[in-house]
Length: 221
Image (cartoon, rainbow, N blue to C red; front, side, top):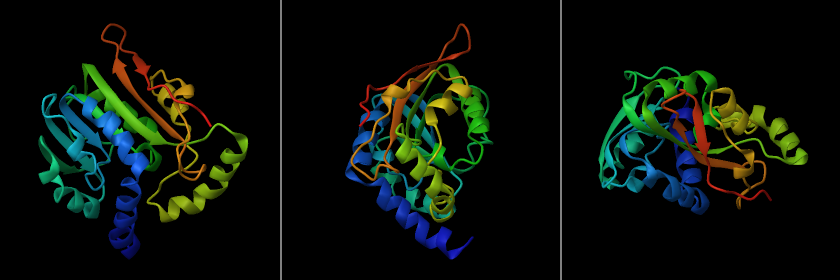
């Protein structure tokens, strides 16, 4: 592992993930998790303190980065629920079918190599009445910001651990069998090329096996 990936990137990820806006989004969505929870891309464990012990039985948190998992281990004490850490990638989850009631994914889809394979894995491990909670940044709506995102992504991805700025999260979710309304996505208070955020929840239809999405209303700026 390079010095950048092992020493520098975890610090940058930690700093970015603790911004006021991002912490507020974590605080909005993570407490909605219930039952047995799988967190995808746990990073340094910034979500742990937001899990509600009245709703959550246990959390299994995965990440492919050993340095980030080491930071997450130091945060387990902040959690009011049981947290187990597993080094794994979203495209190949080491869990049986139907193992979880909730999957939590915050600022993770941007850096997954194969998002469709990862989302298929999430469907596999969710129980029939399971739920996906997601907060993700991605491709903006306005053309000028999109052009900037596509121009910046090759360089940004190299320095930001594979993070892509130009992923259309709504389209990716729909292609994976999720129904998502792009009007739920909005800019916040960061750089426009970085802060366009999709947030919501998706449930498995126990009758048809399809996905229905209910996303927090948002305003596009």
